[in-house]
Picture 1 (cartoon, rainbow, N blue to C red):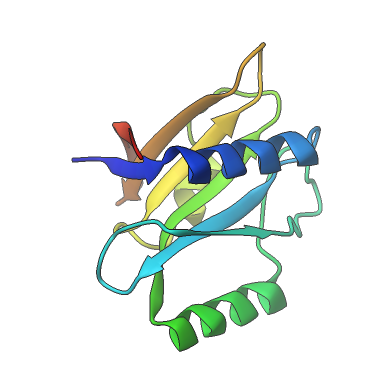
Picture 2 (cartoon, rainbow, N blue to C red; picture 1 turned 135 degrees about the vertical axis):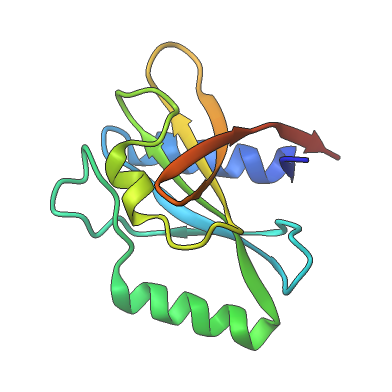
Amino acid sequence: MGLVISGGLLDAIVEHARSEHPFEACGIVAGPAGSGRPVRHVPMANASGDRRRRFRFDPEEQLAVWREMDARGEDPVVVYHSHPRGGAYPSREDVRAAWDPGVHYLIVSLRGGSPEVRSFRVGGGCADEEPVTLRG
């Protein structure tokens, strides 16, 4: 089935990626627990020591975001980050760092003229691309 996401959410993710360029942007999209529906964009700070080539959520911010999701009855549905100079495909580090095979891992590539967006399911050391469908 792939990732079904609103154009508004996707636009917000791409805008976040552009605003952080030349560094990698990162964040999540939360949705009602158990629904698998992405509804709330949560941009996060990139705490990596090498923000041009990697992303890492700040542990304190991540804890606060996850507590907020719990309080709101939400789950992380999408984890996203950008590749300022690379393609929209997960690196080995991206695959290694993925922690939940039920989450959509979305990558925005800013290489070239227009953004390229691709989504993956990651688990067992493999990244399987899935279709991205825009809704309303």
